[in-house]
Image (tube, rainbow over the protein chains, first blue to last red):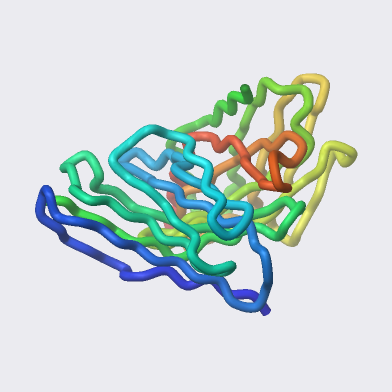
Length: 112
Length: 116
């Protein structure tokens, strides 16, 4: 069966520090991968998605970037965090050419 | 693009009552409508979905109805229990995007509180 792993679960970082959040999927190949942010107030905002290694689509201009160095690995990064980057970050995957997400357990990022 | 409106934003019910959450969408090309449940501090989980060629789908205490003409769909939870307390999201999806990507438009969520 397929599983998605996301870490760390919580992170407190100072303003101006770098960020690296990692997401991996097991039990499938060539998944579509997604990064979402959920700020206070519950809405889910799509940040990036990837349909293959090295293929990244950005939905929202921001202080963040994403990379997909391996088929089942998706990384969210920032060179310098802003206070506004605080939030709950969710990784998700879907099967190629199929509907439906499986979300990871999320990372609670607090920038101080 | 697609726009999904979800109501109410908060719903408070007594244990055993029914709960109904409603969503409307704007893009007539949307053909897949999932519902997700998000418990506190966790990622959303798919609880039920419906495709545009079906009017209603049921899974034990939860059901979803779809009215394509009116462009609205609803989640119905019967005999609510305290463990049903969570944030519920609806979503609407048009046909798959570039590279077979699945990019739904989510509603803003409904916080369901079930009082024992």
